[in-house]
Amino acid sequence: MTNLIFSNIVGFFLVISLYILPFVIIIKIYYVFKRHEKRKDEMFEIEKQNAILLKKRIDEMSNRLSDIEKNLKEVD
Image (cartoon, rainbow, N blue to C red; front, side, top):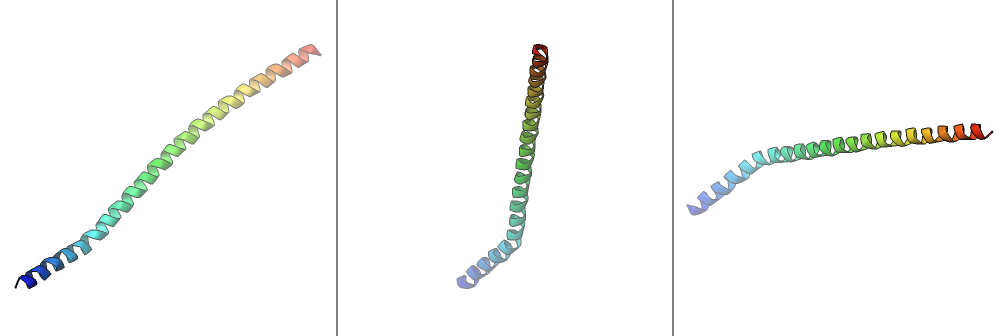
């Protein structure tokens, strides 16, 4: 009798776990994709900031080059 109850309990938990396991896997996959999206957005923001800094540096160098050209024209 106890053997039958034990096997029924084990069978019940096995069936329940087979139903729950796919949901757990789907939830885990969802959170992995969510985290990946967050990292991608953070990387996009970093790249955007780097592009802005590079643009400022290029503008600054362009201004310096213009000043140098102007000084060279004055010397001639």
